[in-house]
Length: 296
Image 1 (cartoon, one colour):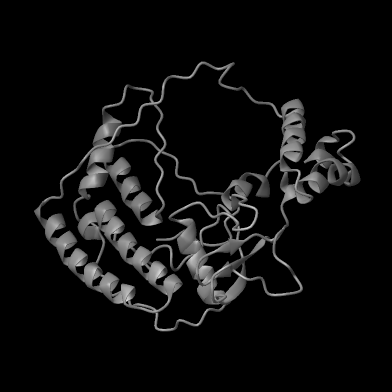
Image 2: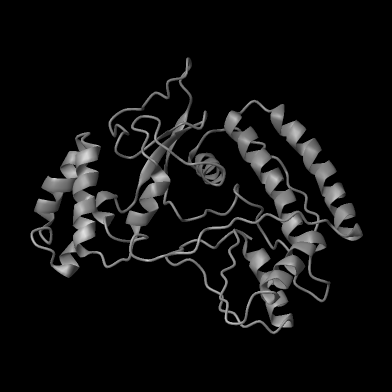
């Protein structure tokens, strides 16, 4: 971006490397961040909260009750999930156990969203505990849905780099960031990984590791959520949660614009159906730069 805007002298990559990237890599993060902030402030057109008076933020939480059919369906799925979580806990692999439990919990989350539209599924536990790139990739995707992914060495918040991956400051991030993930779920970022030897995780007995790509903001299908069609959008009545959402939108003053977010496209499918039935105009959009399909 600096080259495109011809921001002197940082339209010359050598100056940017010298003044910002080199201090960052040499451990002087505070100075690098300070310089980056000054650069951004001088070229970025934005309005801060000191300039724009925004209304106070209000967080509202509502407790909804399933109808009879949804409650029966949830209880049936919950019983199956509980037994599978018990089976996963008895496993020998920490990462496999973690991935399996999150997958089962996500199944309950989907039932809460979709009600009886979420068909009962038979999710099998992974049989293989071999720690390879595929297993590590699934574990990393699951880890990213539950907490901040940070480097165990430099404590860098890898999720925070999502803003610079596709925008200003992308020079600070390698085009194909790779992290080292251990079976104990410790992560080492690409800057701290030694390319010439295997890094230890710090456990008493070093855990196996695998180097996998990690792109914050991109969701990998598989471990983080159930794969395959999550629901069937048919003539069945809308689930309780979607009904409550549509009802709340209808109560808003005329001219009010709202944004509805969901991790699952299947939830958005039912939201779209509810908006259409209530004659609420909408525009549906997806995140840009997504080489992978969003989870169902």
